[in-house]
Length: 199
Image: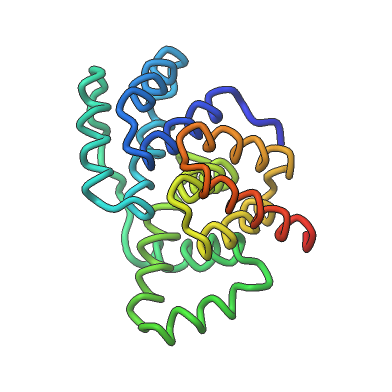
């Protein structure tokens, strides 16, 4: 895939948001707005609550609205769509590890498994306004900054599974490194070398 320039700006936004870097967020917002990518920005911030929590997403939306962007209409979707779409999207990201993931989540808590599929992958990550490959790049950027070992390893593989080129994954890591602690960058590079060796 050829990654458009505005998608790299979303990667910068995701990393800045994960780092709580207000200046970085504002810089990305301004460039995304100038590029006419308001709807993609809305999606990027919306999906962040899955990885950064509601407080971070709420505060980032507050900051985004201060740039004069109007609130969009709510999506007209429901639970039946979310369940089926969630299973499809989750399976695409996890590929051969999908059944094992579902088993492990259900062992932790059956409702955690259901929420992951319906809420995470169906209701949010499966929304059509942003492609899954770009969504995975944003997830990787957030997880690099957070240093979330297990989830980062899974989503590095997931990015490859949904068609992100290895060189683009490396660029995501490099861009996220501008906002991440050195130890988290080193972890990301180590995990990426393992994922790449098995790809």
